[in-house]
Amino acid sequence: MSSGPLLLDTTIVLALVRDKDLGKQITSQFDLESAVHRPLISIVTVGEIWALADQFGFGESKREFLKKVLATLVVLDINHETVLDSYVEVDRACRRARGGARVLSKNDLWIAATAMAANAVLVTTDKDFLCLHPEPCAVHYVDQVIPKKGESPA
Image (cartoon, rainbow, N blue to C red; front, side, top):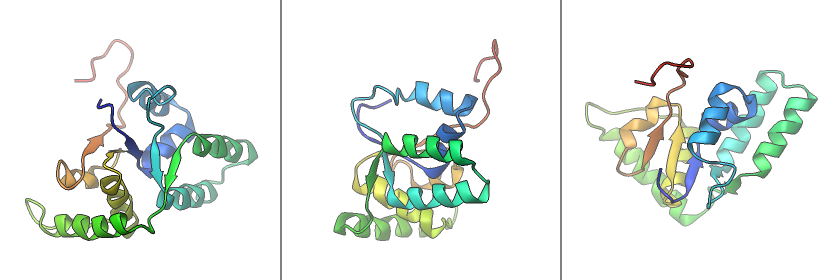
């Protein structure tokens, strides 16, 4: 993986908070605990992850763990001219995607725009972002299927 910054999508943060095989794989694969650059997230992800915590009925201990995970990440605001310009560019790229227009949710547009503005690689388990790679936004897709011990990730 590049030595540049990573911006984690909400799906990645959720995997980290669930603290199961996928989250452990992501932590290891991207060396999140000792990376030179602390991982970034959009403020939109903060709202989404707390809404998911409510939706999934996270108890007090899981909410405390969520707070600890969020404290390890750098939260970027969307109220910045570069992010706003990037939002327009990401939306345009979705409309002109090879193979036909792609529709991203508004939250996903903001997350991709934040990654683009930060010149970061967007790390996600959501294939919807792949239409943006490599331009206008670098995307690293993480497959949610974890190979069993002894199997190759093929």
